[in-house]
Structures are given as C-alpha cells and as structure tokens.
Length: 256
Image 1 (cartoon, one colour):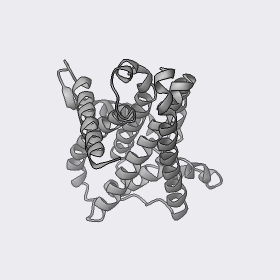
Image 2 (cartoon, helix red, strand yellow):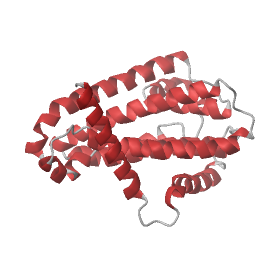
Image 3 (cartoon, helix red, strand yellow):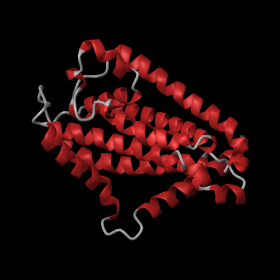
Image 4 (cartoon, one colour):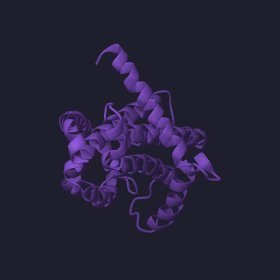
C-alpha cells in the first residue's frame, strides 16, 4: 500500500474501532465498569467453587484467576464476534469500497482497548502484593503483543472462512468452550501430568498467560520449548489469517 492508502486504512480502522467502543455500552448505566465487573463476577463464582478441588493451592489465586479471565474474555469475545462480522456487514460491503480486513480488526482492537483499561485497573491492587518488578513490564508487553497478533490472525482467518462456509461460526462457538478448559486459567500448569504437558505447548494461549502470570504475580516463566512452539504457532496462524483473508476477500461481494 502507498503512504496515503496506509493512512486511510488506519484512519478508517480507528473510526470503526471507535464505533464499536461507543456501541457496546450505549444506554448502559455502568458503562466501562462492565470491563471489570463481568470478569470479577466470574472470578468470585469460579474461585469459590474450584478452591475445593485444587490439589495444589495457588498463591494469590483470585488474582491468578482474574488475569486469566480478562485475557480469555478478550480473546473469546473478539473471535466469536469477528468470525461472522463480514456476513453481518454485508450491506456496508456492498455499498463502499475499502479494505475488508478493517471489519474484524476493528472488533479486535476495540476489545483490546477494553483489555488495556482493565489491566491498568488491575495493576493498582497487584502493586500491593509486591510481586511485580521492573522486568515485569517487559514480560507483560511481550504477552500483549503475542495476544494481539494471535487474536487478529485467527479472527481474520475465521472471518474469511465463514463467508464461504457458514459452519465455521458454529464450530468456533463450540470449540471456544473446550479451549477455555484446555487453557491454564482456572488451574496452574504445574498440576498437568508431565506425559500430557506437550498438549499445552500446542495451545498458543498458554505462553501468553504464563508471561502475564509471571509479570503480575511472579509465577514461573514458560519453558524454552513452550516459548518456541507457542511463538511459532502464533506467527503461523497470523500469517495464515492474513494470506487467507487477502485471497478470499476478492470474492466477498459474491458470497455475502
């Protein structure tokens, strides 16, 4: 893209991201507070129930759980909403000519803004735990970059495929439930039997969560194998998403 086209792309992306932000909490009383209230309610309920089943108690478990729920809510909401986004915006697609990738990306970026606000609010009480150091910022930033790249990539991939195969949206909705329990959100990775540990290496969300858990709570960092495999998967999914979306977007006008 030329410099002007790039500028227009980001201006439109920001405009649609802002539209998503305004639309979500329109006519609500608590507005942006729901960013924290929803995962807080989940944290209290899940934390109360699962503490009876945890064989190994996790220090600062409610903070551990809250971090995982914030990340998961961002990822699952972005993916589930971005997947059918091209189909839902068929009227806009037929009326105007613009980069179709802006539609799912605006959903991801609007949710990312919500996540950043929630994380800033979370940092205040975490500071009193004395678990964060100067290097924590580095690991937290890495986690956010990986999370944004992966979520954007898989959202583009699923959004493009859903235009041609409408079953993709139903598959994503069903698979997200399984994916939640296959991610160390309500339990630490340390309780996973070693012979099954390799399965979590093929879940890109594992690495991001471990980086955040280390950054905020001082928990162990992911191992070298976990970092290499997870990062390669994230890059592969992101590249596939960009390539497939670019290829399929030429036919969106015919399919929607």
